[in-house]
Length: 336
Image (cartoon, rainbow, N blue to C red; front, side, top):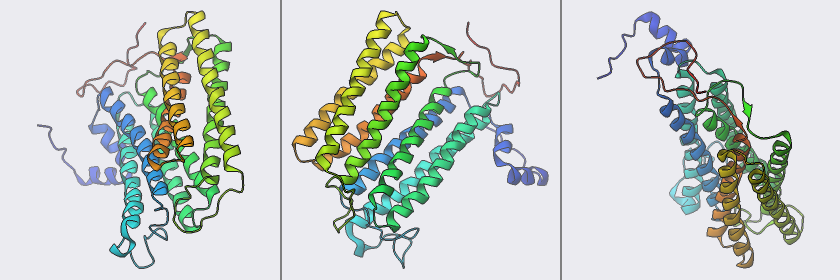
């Protein structure tokens, strides 16, 4: 049984002034605990994208017609709002679950021994992105689902996923200087892949803003562009990403690269193929909601897989596990 610390008046004041430092002095999580906390934050970031997509695809974007309350007279949804109110308010409540997951990641990172400032900052970066996106989500409602604000809302969540992915990777590494595993030319190819993938996702938000799923059954402003032409541009960018991924895999095989980059590139290629199949099926079947939702999930997985390829190109010495009883401030051992 873990003893409960004696909270003297001085300790209580310290806990109020700096609760994270107070917890860190009394708790040392195992490395696996920190990894799971970072993974939970990443998973919740993806979940919030999927549930946000469900809000739009069910026409529930204005199920709560105002913000921060659900209506002028109620903080929560009411029975008069129907199913759309339940869906929109439920998605708002999931933001608190996401915030809790990010908070848990921050606490775990801050309590790790030795103290890892960079890891903790990645957790705080997620916190501020979540807070900013929460406000932006409220603005989306207040301006009646303006498509440009909806696109910005999605792109900010994509940035959150990027930070969460980096933090998750960093929990499985040490803090030594990164050592590149491939040549500069290969790294430049991967950066091109990342840039085109980011552009692909951005154009995808334009497809959404110009397409038929406006997010509400009432008249909603749309981006004044030809939806099919933007969709074709999106498809061209997707094929460029697939081509770059295949070229990267071929180059990595030719230069006898380590297994890490090869495996991550293979994973990306498979995710891209699955995403492409879903994309073409939804296009030729008049965009059924379930497939559009699956495509949004696929967008998150493509982005994560692309970032994992980038992060696999360098190596940091891995930290050895530190038991809960160890409080040594000395640097963790690294592997040769």
